[in-house]
Amino acid sequence: MDKLTAFDAFVQSAETGSFVAAGRKLGLSASAVGKAVVRLEHRLDVSLFHRNTRNMTLTEEGRLFLERCRRIFEEVEAAEAELARSNRTPRGRLRVSLPLVGMLLTPVMADFMRAWPEVQLDLDFSDRLVDVVEEGFDAVIRTGQPLDSRLMSRNVGRFRLKIVASPDYLARCGVPETPDDLAQHQCLHQRSPSTGKLRPWPFARAERREKVVLPERMSATAVDPLIALAIEGLGIACLPPFAIRGEIADGRLVSILDEWVEETNQFNVLWPASRQITPKLRAFVDFMAEHLQPQ
Image 1 (tube, rainbow, N blue to C red):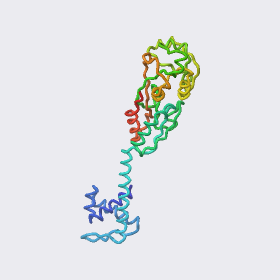
Image 2: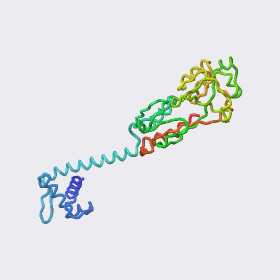
Image 3: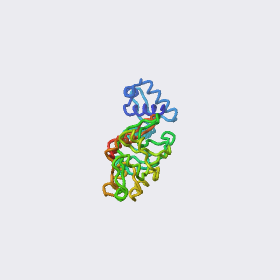
Image 4: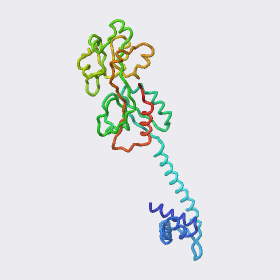
């Protein structure tokens, strides 16, 4: 920093032609500017100015050094401008953890990449309970209520689960009209990879879930096997709507008991509370909140 101060004193003195004028521009006394230039000359072991009582002019070495100093300050200004742009413009690698079902959100991720081409997404798909802080993730997207007090969170999308089965299954086994009827059906369950427990089916009243004992035909920690087996007519499954939008649209799956399903799930983006939110993370969170509306 002392060197840059001395360089600045020299440049201003050369451009204004006097220590007094240079001091005015730098907010220093003429004596302080003169001493800085003298120290610089001693360090370089060269005279930068021809001095007399009326004026001072650059020596040949001074002219060469002035050109170099100007380039140095131009580089400093360019670096400052680049850093300022970096602080404003989302760019760089963004490491995000998503649940396996998040693979179905690929179109939203593609839209984000088009909107912010200077952000490099590093996506990790896993249903395990990742440690956002210790594993170095910038953010995670998860369903349900956030529990980690070390994390900030923002709800970015809500959705209602659907109870579905194939037309073939319903033709063979009948269409359940109430949650009680499910006790006589083959149920395909999702199991939490972190707790090992079956995830409850979201019927309208909590007491209803306690009364209905859902048979366990099979269980899986991911939704893909449940979708495939439901399409094959092997049972009834409870699935997120965005995971089966196409299957319902083309008739491979049929939604049932809609009037009994009341609970609403949600997507949350979570990030470490101890870190300053960067432009790339802010852009990601805002974009997800605007576009991740899967219901």
